Image (cartoon, rainbow, N blue to C red; front, side, top):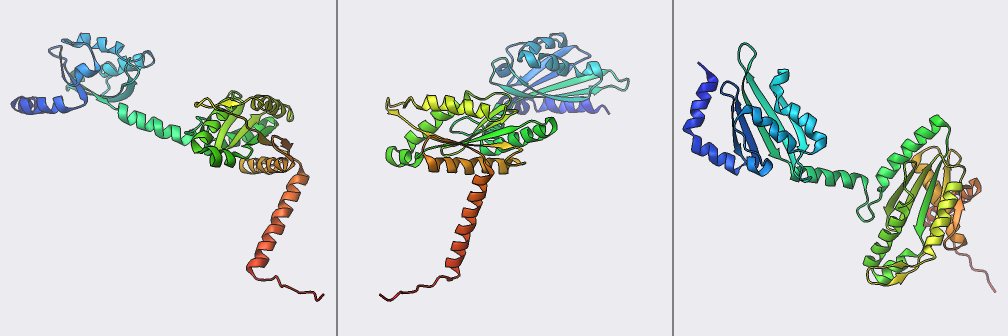
Length: 335
């Protein structure tokens, strides 16, 4: 018994039902009969392709409906029988620049290996594609500024360090923190604070290039990684340019003008640390040391600074431990 012909009879008996299914589907279908050299389309065909097809030779017309970069692959996909392929799939974007299609092909061959029937299915996956792109964006970028986020910055910095080790280069990390940012948030509101973060981040993004990565960690904190810098000259140049910029006010959307200053800490690989997180920590520590001297300052890594910081932390922890264990006593001195 010929299963294909039997299936065909069953489909023709339920023509109305399948027509309703096709009409409700977001997919478009094409059936090609190689013996009769005819094609039939169904479903959302006109939604995707503004082309009417009558013969299998005309199928090549829809090859021009996708964006140019997908055209060669798409034309191969439309004719899998030329390479004896039974099933195939492909994802393409239409020329409108918005619609993404998942394409699937199936070909039935006779006993001699000649193609007999072919079905192509085209499904609109634009919604899922956008959701995927949004998830990818969230994985790598900061929503507020559009800069790389902390996690991705750490990954990129790690790659910089691996490359620097092989090529015997240096990597500088600049840790940047807006001075007294809490006063902007508390005094003017978080909306104004966010706008300052965005504008300052947009300015810092202008330094970005292949060997210089700019990121927004959180709140008012930014981090830059500079590969193969000549000592700390590049970091100093960026700091000087940044200092000149923030001497001018940031103009908010309300028309209000606001001045800011920012502290910078710089730590270099391999002098300060050998891995990404430690290098960032060193840059943050020296930035805090610089802030203690005054606003808008830059502080470069020095082992003495790190030693003093760790000593202060040790003393603080011991004092906390002593208070917790009630090791302090009060002694009154008689007058």
